[in-house]
Length: 355
Image (cartoon, rainbow, N blue to C red; front, side, top):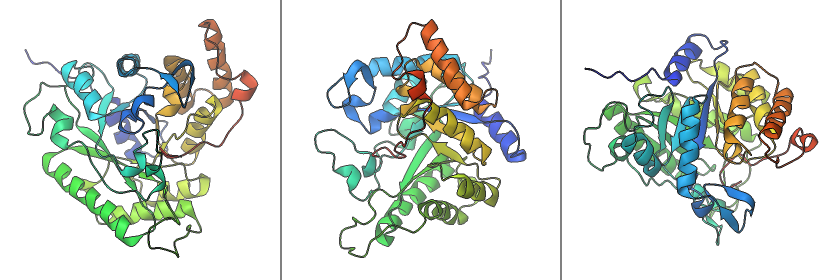
């Protein structure tokens, strides 16, 4: 008897979004790939812990939160490291009977090397590097081996950080080209993350290095320029970029309707930061949100995702969702990180791993 894997919500929504950018569909991703960046702190703090000293949750606890969110079924994508995907997507076949699509972070540029104790990598100009490979994301081995239907990942995230330096940025884009060509040859899909520059003014030997006049246009222009030479077979399914504000986000979304704009969450911030960011981005043309720390730092991740989905689908305004979330925490007898008034305030949050 042939076993059929369920349709993935990501594929259905992408098809509708490309056909009609004004449709209500919105794609949510939980980015549980922090072990590629933060080391021991990646799973998040235990209650009462401090960011500097912990105590932190364990990797098994981190993976259990992934299982819970996948079973809840309200996100469309679960982004993981290759090692976590091996356990959950290959060994356990967690996604085989789920509408959630598994994805793997395919490169870890040096600006996300955020081990505590030194802290200098994030301030140095980003350099390209990839720990994992496409076969390892798909089957857990360096050389391709067959896996059962519904196991492994066939979608990856590739990340770029450009620093307004021709030599460094060329090396970053060459790494992306090499990945794209291999991915196209083997039929591996990807989405493209582009961070803000992480070391403007600090490029070695560049005394003249400075900040571009308009950082949002700098990023948007680089995205469309970098993809102009990429035929359909090698293009990303969608983007993951910082929210560039209403004007530039609208320009980028209108530039090429087949290039679906997605925003990244950045730092945890308040609950209103997360909910309002989704509402604002959607109002100005974005159709994807990928939140890692915002979900992982929530008092109750499943309740947080429930209201995040309601905001993304336009069922509830952001501020009302914050109030409803606090009411749910009260029912669950969970003490919130902030009182309601404080949680209804917007705050500046970092838009990249290293802040």
